[in-house]
Image (cartoon, rainbow, N blue to C red; front, side, top):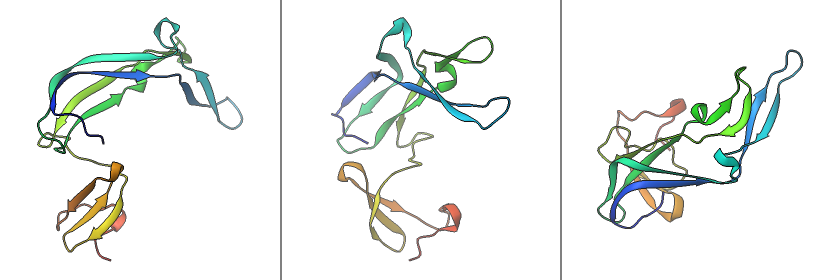
Length: 152
């Protein structure tokens, strides 16, 4: 999560550097191994820049107000295979990108690496990337993984 200047953003550019494709090689007999292949972008370039117009502009109205981009690098459509299904090493990067506001479906964080700063009876505070703190409110409808809870 990074702060960006207030403004309206209507396009995105993503630059990819050199890459290696790793995949599971399952032989007719014996143990599977991890095989690797150097990725090649269109025109045999060593880097690739993907630029696209956003279907809905990303509007940042106030510093610190959460908005975001959902960026999905579609591996199935990006990694080329031959007629037999073998990976060729050719990569034609395909992304699915959309803007996400706080009220939008999918406008939630499902993974956040952070450290707990304090715990209250119905909330806790975590410190995430770049030192930013977030208050997480919970109640009886909160879904916890593995039977965990806010209890100390």
